[in-house]
Image (tube, rainbow, N blue to C red):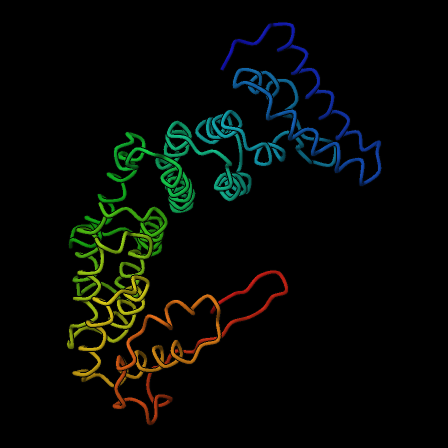
Length: 341
């Protein structure tokens, strides 16, 4: 960022300080107060990191009613400087848990995530109480960063560092070493799902194949394949779906993930597996899902419906699917967009 003229720097700090004091005075009506708070957030977006430090030193106080306008406005600012500054406040233990959670909830909406921004947020992984939420926040930012980057995302050093952390977490907990608490591990798997990079496949396979792990954990590992490219994940998912001795929930989840990659190879796997299916629960679910697709009126599923082979389902599970597992499919018109459930 370009150097800021000392006079301009002081003027910007004074403007923000004045806005904070006016908010504390409550001299305006509710609409004016709202406009003033929005103005504060917009003013913060123009400040450098040093200016934010200056403002914090001057007007980080609470109003008489215990409201702290500057702290409340920081999450709404959204600039990389505001995010870095707030991260520093957290590291220095200058703000409380509620504001930390608010920050982590809003930081995922940063409009232009950068590698340096990923690095700033990653520094919060050293704080155990907020580590699960930090992992989710970073994973959302990485997902968006990867979608806009031309270079392979896994080659960005800041992303590589996060991948190492998540792989280590999975390796410890799914590889029969000292495990993380299951709630934290589920956050890790959700983060892996958000990021969607094939580098996680070896660790996810270990999680799925670890039959001593809770089914909830193994299901999360299957679902974590959601955004991984189809050509990298089909083999793992097909294997899990086709194993007759595997847990029913795992098999159904693997089938669902496999059907996000609809092509003739997948249809052949499903057709052959269904023809030789020994589990009434798995067979009934797959049969009802395919049947619903063939009969769907959902415009979002029309291409899938038209690509299904006519003979992909057998009659073996047609009679009483309600006795076992079944798939329900419907589309809801919310008045704004179509939602397929």
